[in-house]
Length: 419
Ligand code: RAT
Ligand code: ZN
Image (cartoon, rainbow, N blue to C red; front, side, top):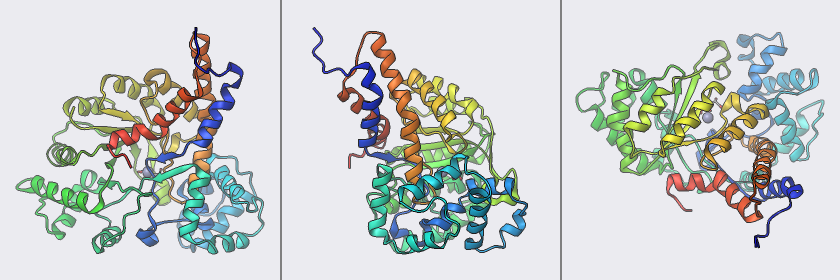
């Protein structure tokens, strides 16, 4: 006789919703910063409104030219975005609705005619209390950062010494090394590492020394790079050499996973600056080749193109050193999150990480994680209902274990850190 305290089919949605609501997640990729990194951390209404997702939308609704927009102050830009996207138009897009959800969660006026009262509210917050409040509203315990050892401002702060905040684990982001070696090898030389333009001589040894020194300084939980949709591996180029002879050996030495975010088309409209990037379908053979050649490295993988998602699931089924994560950037819309999450559950069970926020502005974690819970809940519930219909009902403990895996322990195990 089955004595498991199974939940009734008609309660499945409510139990899943409750488990999701009461489980705190780890946000495994953000652009947020610990308060010890000072001015790098963005928060408040002006930052929320000048988020690059909204700037891209502004130019569709307003006659303002990008050239003129960039001459405005941040306050003027925020006013223009609010007036255009929130007053003169209904904020229906995901990014615009997100601002409304944040204001509502903070009990602020979602229909404000002027931003001044909102500015007063944010100005009166003290970060030491405000960050835990925002994390609580978002239902997260950690926001994993993105840290660039070749960003002059950020590198200077790390070198002067930073108090590490356990709620903001670091990630060493090495786009400048892997994607723009010709422009940035000089910066390594300037820091005292003998790096040559063609990657020859002692360059690989020196890049390893550079990475190792920064691992010691930052204590990152993984290394990361974003790659163009045209990314191929292997190729006869410096990047392949850097991957093989410097980056991946360093990851192995320090037991760090490597995160590959593939599919961006940088600056397809340069006038839009940070809002000017696009997306393209990538050749998944690169991922397959990497997984096969480096069985002793662990990879977090996110593809930007919707068209790459199914193939990523297929490849992940073949290679246990790949962990698909997130519905990245242009994919973070309910319709696509729904499709991708269902596909991943069907093909990978719980062996993936459904989402990260990619938040750039602190309060965004509130709406991004609420939306994830809202979209993922019914999909998880549907999987349990199908399982019950096939003859195996589930308990609340089963659901709790699965939610923990998806939104916490798959990541904790991947980085082999238990704090
Ligand atoms: O999603 C974003 O905000 C993008 O601008 C990128 O930062 C992307 O997530 C990345 O990490 O490269
Ligand atoms: Zn990002």
